Image (cartoon, rainbow, N blue to C red; front, top):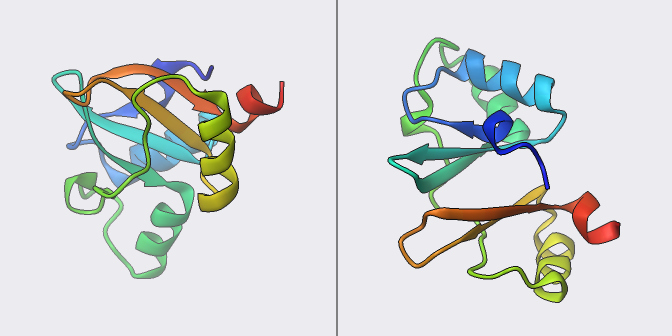
Length: 112
C-alpha cells in the first residue's frame, strides 16, 4: 500500500505543489481530501493538461480535480484487478459509505 501522507492533498493545494507531490511519490495520482473524506483525484495526466492549457500553476486544484473517480468499499483484489485493467488507473481508494479513506491499493499491490 502506498504511503497515504504522500498521496493526500487538500482542495486548496496548488497545481505546482501537486506536481511536486507526483514527482516525489512516484505514483501518478493524488487523492484530494477534506475532513477525512475523499472528494476527488488529480492525476499526472490532469496536471499535464492543465499546464498545456496555460493554467496558472499557483491556482488551487479545487476547480480541476476529478469528482468521477473509481473507488471500492472493501478490499477485493479480484475487483481491484479488473478496475486496474479496465480503467488504466494507478491507485484505487478503498472508502467507507461516507467516503472516508479506509485503505489504498496500487497496481503493485495487485501484482505482488
